[in-house]
Image (cartoon, rainbow, N blue to C red):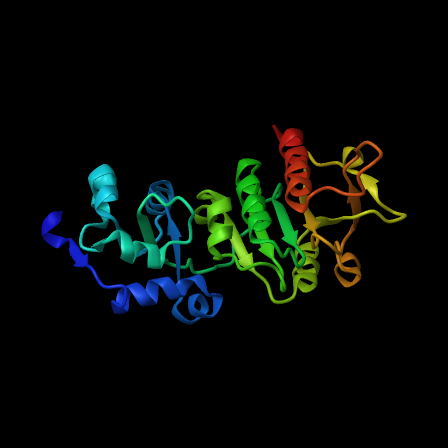
Amino acid sequence: MQKNLEIITSRKNAGVLAAAALAEKKQRDKTGLFAFEGIKLFCDALGAGMEIEKVFLTERAFERYGEKLAPANGKLALVSEEVYAKLSFENAPQGVFTVAKKRTEGEKAHGARAFALFLDTLGDPGNLGTVIRSAEAFGADTVFVGEGSADIYNPKTVRAAMGSLFRVDVRACTDIAADIAKMRGEGFRVYAAMLDKTSKSVCELELAEGKVGFVIGNEGHGVRESVRAACTGSVIVPMCEGPESLNAAICSSLLSWEVFRARM
């Protein structure tokens, strides 16, 4: 492996500059690439069949993780600590910075007991990543990420998803209300997570069978009325008096758990 190990010592190296620029969404959109850090995410991406473009690593990381990095032989670049600092998004990095190709999104057929999440202008990338992580944990088939939401490939989203992004069917949408209408046409019952006069407790819903979906809204403003209008109805998570609402990612996790529990 050492024969194919590129050595980079300059912070102005073209490959380093291009990789560092992936911190910006416009560069990710332009190149079709994204970046993430850590040996676990590298292994998860490899295991999920993601296409690795380049791995920048420090000497300490090479000594510690060399065997795990072996499948990327020919795409590894050894960099100095100063060069790695130019790349890193993290406060305490492990010294493994991976550049990979975004997944090509394709239409996935949904079965008779499909479960989906629809995210309406969910703005925080950490929340988005957490939703994707719990979606995998509780068996969601697809996560639809609506317009105005955080970028799927934001480094904070990728980190919070903890590898689930590489395995879950996650789709960026340009019109989430239209996608909800389309899914309803395919037999989905879709409920907006919000309090209105018609809201039902999630405990009242029949979740064991059929196609079902939940809409999670913006952290501050909730689900938009135009999106609510496209839904079958609305749903709440029962809770004690006091707090007005739950964190969006926690709400998504609880609703997803209810579907999972009903179908265990």
